[in-house]
Length: 275
Length: 208
Image (cartoon, rainbow over all chains, first blue to last red; front, side, top):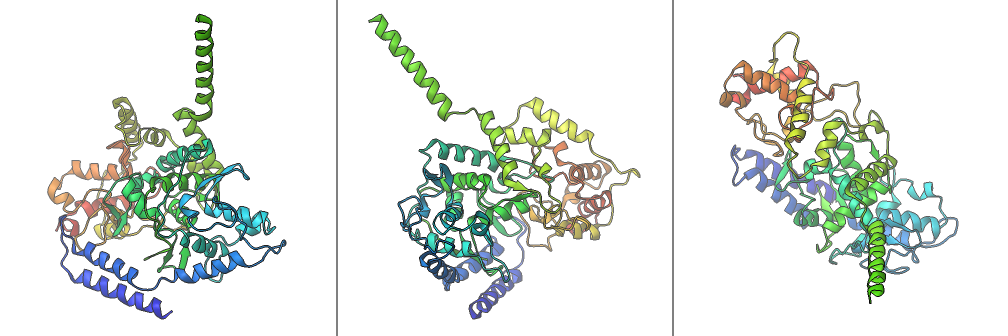
């Protein structure tokens, strides 16, 4: 709570500084951009509340739960049962036991159903947290992803279903629809663009995809929640004026496959902290 | 020897066909499957129905030619059909109140499943464009519109162009990133006139 207040104060100070600088109409050295950069720097310098989610997630992973009273310690994230270290850096991937391509969040549902005996609906319950709605998914994602910190992203398309998911994800990325004619690529297909003051990563090229993908999940200061990649996609499509992207759906996994593979080679650096 | 060659050829062709089937579906097959997958992966919510995934001819063509310049006949088809769909103001006036236009330009809600469809939507112009120099929080996806009227001249042709462009951007630049605000029923005729005023009124801060 204290930390939060401090961040707000830093934010206010930085914005005030930025606003007090006369506005440059043309391009070039933009004092506003510098102000935002300072705010982002300040965000990175303190402790990250995501650690609270990581700790709770580790607890959930190792605590017997569900009708089967089982832990998730035998959950196979692709590197063998129980191997968490580095697993996220190689996801999404094909899982022979499910005969399908899964991202982390889809795989966690699978493990909670198969190992702990939860129903599919229960395993997907509260997949995104909110006020008075604690999300086990967010905590588990925080824990598993933290175990890939510092490891280079290495997502492969060796299996035909992985290659297919990537190809579908690419199509979905460029699909224009809805009342505003938006595709993902409308905002994320060019470099050095921003919406209002928010920089937009170009997810169709390596540098942009690497920077963006390697910093999700993230603790969102403005929301007081740890947000997962499934959440990121869900909220993008809301703003794209599309209907609601369903949690752990095929389209969500395919799009994640496209973006994750574009980020290959990036040193994974999340859970991060964002405004 | 000839027999062996024939056998080899048969084997290689057969393998090629098998590999072809297993690993390389055609581009249009992947596109069709992507639409199928999307329809199964989204759910209607609030005002956003699944019909929003049904592309019109413009969206379909612009998706197909993403990252490429569409052929001239496709560009013509898009621009002509969209131009024909513009509803021009019955009273022949393109300019409203720039102060109201500024509010429309600032406001970003509308058409999201989280928005109340009974409330008026905004144009969210500042998300992508620089307009009034007083607003420092502007995006850069679209070009700067600062001094729009001052630079182009305060004439009827430019007023009409601004109105038409906001009503249906695809009529002037095929596969533009800009939403078709009138065509999609996002902004009303009166709101569009107000935004035209923001761009074209000599008293508007945009032209200061």
